[in-house]
Length: 413
Ligand code: IMP
Image 1: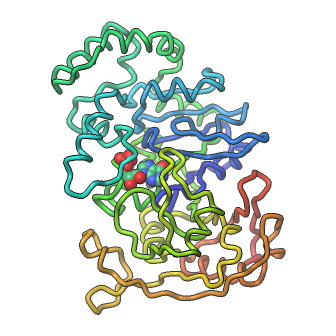
Image 2: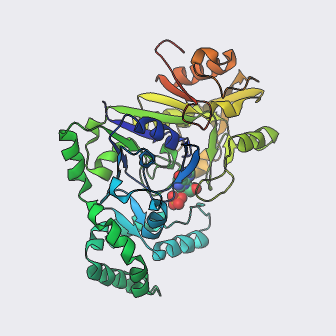
Image 3: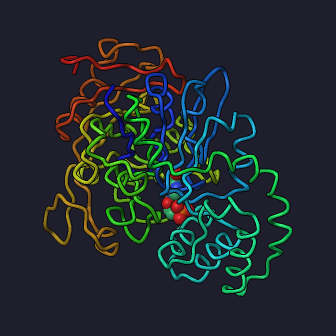
């Protein structure tokens, strides 16, 4: 079994959770490598809806081991809540992952309020957690292995930030949970390498998407980690040369939650219909997602950055009844045509997208099991995406349930 990375090629919310759930059947170990509980992965399985923020989506499958890598930032209170329905022995947490405390959430709030242009963060303390990590002030999971040491470190941190916080009572409240997870806080890098030697297979589940990557996304309106698969090497200590398959996930249209430039955004009855049919409300914050046309300039950038070598298209069914589908193929900036994403927000905000238009369809796609069953217009739309990105589409999702997934055979498109 080839190791696999699942990567969002847009602004997150592409449906990575469903894809990870689909693949978890075949893989032994599912690994989250970056971000924290800013992510929200929704999975419909066993007649239930699961919304996962920190745990890899593989947790729903009993045979999997689920790893939270060193690149993650973890809020213990959130983890305690999320783990409740699951068997804790099925997770391993990197002893090098950083912790998020109420202090980080407070800093997140203050930074957002002070900025002239807010980022629209999830306010989960993600940015400040990575800030403290980079400034070598962070506290890592390893500290939890000695509660006295942990309490002292937390006290020092609170004093440094002049943050009034009852450290003793925070630690006391969390102590039973910390004791529960202590046996599972390990050197996950060594674990992954040992498991590889035993022939186990790995699926790496990215959170957010390439356009929210700290370096390659629409800076400064990005998250503070690296959702691109090349960060797997640093964020897990498992070299990415061992990750052969890089599955790029693309929603059949485009959404964004939070602030920041969005050249193909539109708001009318059609986009409102898409928002309702696609349940386009943030899984973490409940905010309505902004809706736009597919943006090939951004997608080509995301493919370059991620090295995606196969594609999955999700939520195709949501586009039923949209009369015409637009794909932005180039931007115009100050009278010049460009096909790369300007690095400066003030330039990106001024681009005029140029579109190629495709006919829509009226048929419900939710029962389609093969590409052949799709209406001609849907096939034409998929073929256009495939040829513009020059990567094969291997999966097409036509509904929220596990079964609503078309596996594309060679030559189908
Ligand atoms: P932060 O990650 O909370 O710092 O938020 C930074 C930006 O990333 C904001 O625009 C958030 O809305 C966005 N963001 C963070 N996590 C996700 C996600 O899982 N899906 C979509 N957007 C996200």
